Amino acid sequence: MNIPVLTIDGPSGAGKGTVSRAVAKKLGWHYLDSGSIYRSLAISALDKQVDLLDEAAVAEVAKNMQLAFECDDELVVKLDGIDITARLPTEETGASASKVAAYPAVRKVLLQKQKDFRQLPGLVADGRDMGTVVFSDADFKVYLTASAKERGDRRFKQLKEKGIDANLDKITQEIMLRDRRDSERKTAPLMPAEDAFYLDSSDISIAEVINQVMILTE
Ligand code: C5P
Image (cartoon, rainbow, N blue to C red; front, top):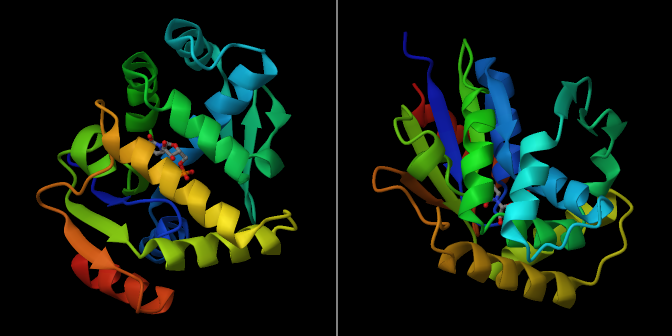
């Protein structure tokens, strides 16, 4: 039986998380935030004092980590039984995630963990390679982007709202650096799937983006 999937890929700060969560809620589908898996891996490796430059050692951490996503009002992520939700959104975690995410051995270990999220009645999957690799047979694919300036502004506001100290210029620069690393890597680089619906959200509201994505799934 085909379990429907909607993939939403794109660079950081394009609004993928907000859009994916809203659309998943409207459709009554499950939601996969694949970035949080790479973020959790980075946290686990750093806590275990594993050298992030050691691909085999990081892949071993990926194999052994126990991740649980618990959805109450807000998403709670537990790593080996410990709540790490508050540590996930920082740009430092994002930068480390982007380093470990470049390793083919790591991506291989995490592939099945992500595929397991495909459950009835359907899945909205948010990431970089959801439509190109993990769910290349997805029924609906979106590539959501926005200008670097706009994405920097949004990310800055998001972090402030979460009470995380941030500097706008630094955030924008870090985002651009992370995008470059994610786009230039050899394995599963950030790029639109050939059959993806390309959406630039720089000049349209998130509500309008949600609307357009909903129309796509009709
Ligand atoms: O989406 P988010 O900012 O949480 O992702 C953190 C990092 O995880 C990204 O910069 C990227 O390097 C990596 N990632 C990935 N593939 C995905 C999702 C995230 O490589 N599907």
